[in-house]
Length: 241
Image 1 (tube, one colour):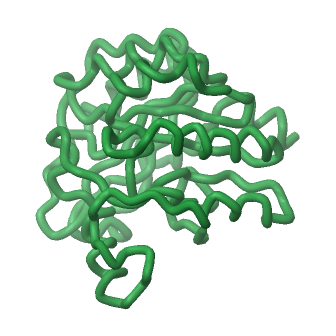
Image 2 (cartoon, rainbow, N blue to C red):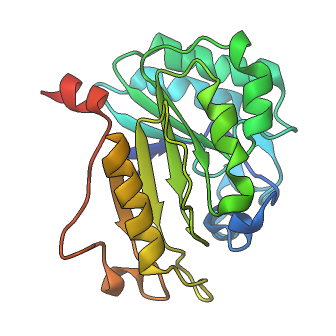
């Protein structure tokens, strides 16, 4: 586990590592780049670089945390990748079920597999399930997510690569939007962001603007219309009150 610089979470936990590209949002995968760095540093967990791997010993980590955490699960992988055995997915869920004091945020691009297995998993209140939606071509992921039994459902529109004018936000609790960063980032249009923000407002869905991205994401910042948007699902706000 590690403290995270990701604005919408506190820390990361990676019981699985590695992935393969599945859609255009994967083109400049930050996890793949980071995996190469960690392998070069001699970190045992990344000795196979970005090959899909499960890590049994990592399942014990959440039991050691003394205080409640907000945790991004598998920032370096996709829990619903076809090469991750379902039995291991169940073990990850059992750990999350056993630790209701923590919020676990799970994000996938493989919404079809999520839908296939969701009835066989226990969706305790502390598991937030999200799908990545980078452009209109993958909006079907939202429909698969909507059918799951997750108590909190969210969208990660990052990197946002196109307009999403017809989002069906029924049953969705939270939307994160962000631009691509790195050496060759693809541009994000301001109108695309405002379009999503307006749809969230109309549907009373929490809106979180993560970053503009670009080659220098710190310089470009997080301000939208002169404001920072850090809205979170009502369930977290209620629990922290």
